[in-house]
Length: 511
Image 1: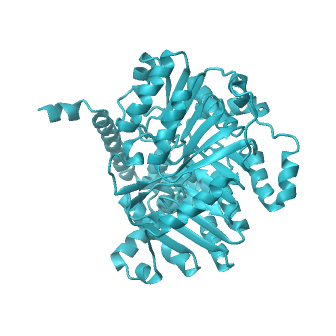
Image 2: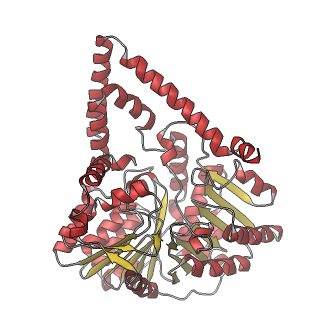
Image 3: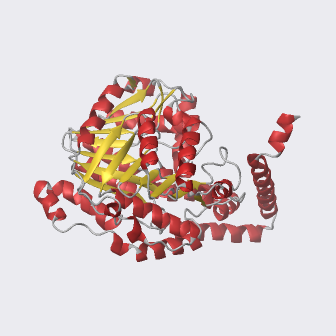
């Protein structure tokens, strides 16, 4: 009986019922439209053609256009109905307008230090151009006066995170995709409550959809009652629409404006291997101390202002407000973010820039490898040009369909000379690029359509930091625990699997 009550009063149960009823309604509408007169059906087919022509002329990914075009033209009635529900890849227009207003107000906040660009230009113009792209199109400047510490496992980052949270005297900002009850979150929450009681400004943003199975409904109200400022991104409503796909996938923690954490690590026990899911969970992160933390602070406060509609006094949170001493310099550091609210694919373009300009090697970690033609071309061309391109993916997947799709890209990449490794101890959740002993990117951005086109993401671009060598060394050490995927292995897959992969590839942008 307890199990029955647990199911009946579970948030996921009510959501599932609501979505099921909506699916029944849409299927009924589809049946009704399908039973209309021939003239009406021809009119609907004409509408389908108009939608396709409109899609073809939109400035969106060609793969996304192709998937919808095939679906709409093969079954006009079903395709049009589906497009009405899921056809837009943007969040609600209200949020878009609010976000644009906040960004416009905050443009003055992110200015590059005079002389810094000239210094980077003089060292390496090629690298400076990559940084310049981020500055001009993500609108986050490169910084010096920052040290970077790399963590090769979530369990190594966790104690340092607790330590820095415990030192907080003025404010703590946290923004995460997933929070789940357990050792990690309870340890953090205990510190947050104590700090809030001491007068520290504690704020938390979590993605409501990302936490749909891990947190209760209106969880933010529970935290507010305990003295914490908390807001849920894009509160989940059981409505069938594409807005469900726009998620806050960022991982950001800022302490007192001068210490920051980011990477692929969420606040759940599997990320620190206290809980076993899909074998050993390999994830990575970094800690920043110094000027570059300001970029992370602005990212958080912009999102906070959009969600809560509360004005923010940004000047109260600058790095030197509570750290008047100069910071140590460890190379060039440039935290940045990407959103689905504009036409600039910053996350993918930063990756493409690194691949296209690499001279010796590019080592890549990604849990999902679902790439478009531009990324496939860049990876293959780099390998064909003599660059050592290596990609590490999970040995044990968290999503089997997505993993099957990931593996469908192996053959073409391997034929071009790309080396692919599957991490055998378990699931690889790290998202990182290391290039030519000097450049690296680490953050929340996966190599799939969701991360690159639908999610709010963040990452850090690094040049000549000590952490770059640590990332390279960790990659090579992790590679020893991998199985290298061979061309024979790809070709030996049975025809049924290859057929399923072909279909999945066609609709990859929708998965």
